[in-house]
Image (cartoon, rainbow, N blue to C red; front, side):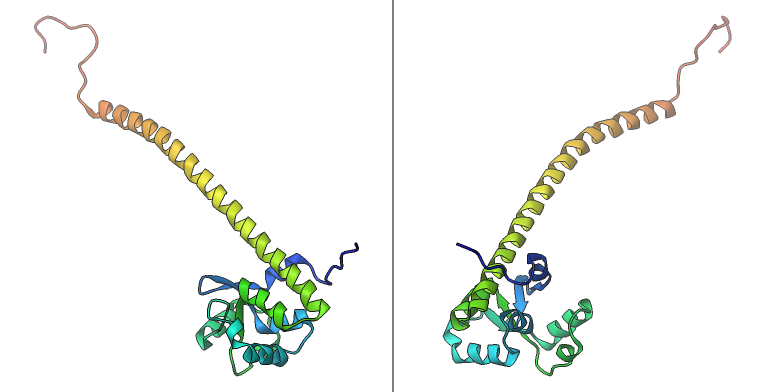
Length: 175
């Protein structure tokens, strides 16, 4: 069986995933572009199927969130930046649910690619967590060793400041 590949890379998809409210999301206009539909059509389908999109699957950005995102990301088209309503943000589950209301072959291929991109991000985050734990373990290990070194240096410094007994030949009757 020949597998159809979408005309975009996983890296492109990962670039379109944002963390908003501590959640990885994709924005409606990016999804519409990937699915090959107008943003307006995508939003209409979502409005016609409100039961499929609870708040943990999709939410609308606040104006402040949207303005902050525009400030951080300069890659949004000018037309989108000045659109009066902030976009809808779809979580991984929301993106998955979109494939059930957008039933084209392209929507299926895009959805598979997006799910793979979310999975890659999760694996990357897990790898980073493992690295952080290893670094912390090394720091703890070496902090203890350096603590011993610093303690020994401190003891040597303290010994130098204490009065020392004179060394050498002493003449009887002199101090």
